[in-house]
Length: 213
Ligand SMILES: [Zn+2]
Ligand SMILES: [Zn+2]
Ligand SMILES: [Zn+2]
Image 1 (cartoon, rainbow, N blue to C red):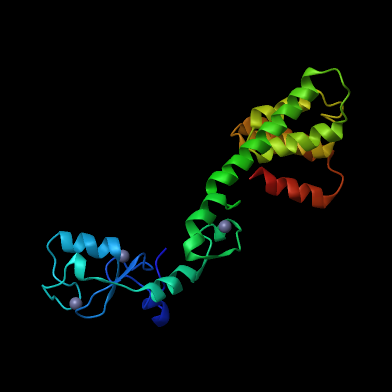
Image 2 (image 1 turned 90 degrees about the vertical axis):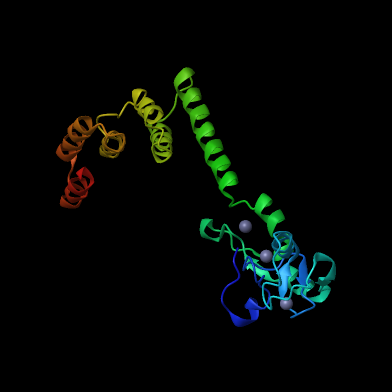
């Protein structure tokens, strides 16, 4: 997380890594601010002061700046998963902690998707492996959910038990979408044609012609 080029925020920036300061250290020679690890590494490599080139600067002469550190720690930042939907503003010192717990983190979202898919597959097994009667509506909803989760083979299995598999326009279209998205274009075209013959309105026909592409 790099500090933005706003002038106030720039004063909270380390002169070496240009990120927000961590364990602030101030140089006694020119009062520049650096992260402790950044300036330590610099000096260990035999560098003079990065700002004023003073050669008397050593790790032991660096000053702490507790007040500035407190300010930097409390700067509120966007959660790094803001694009995934997290709107939390997090004090910088809590950021690492928040990243672990954020429900929008990549790992948490992948987990959630995985759980959703497992649930759908469990439902599919229940529908297909037991004698309990299932409505075509429930099978359709499940096929749609599996399609959205890219589980094409599983989605296809839902149609086996459907009574209106070939007589409901909605169901034929869903089958066509699944074949199309799974790259089975010949099957998809056959199903789109089948659906086209079932259409009763021009708007349905246009929708189908667009879906074929
Ligand atoms: Zn730094
Ligand atoms: Zn200096
Ligand atoms: Zn978050």
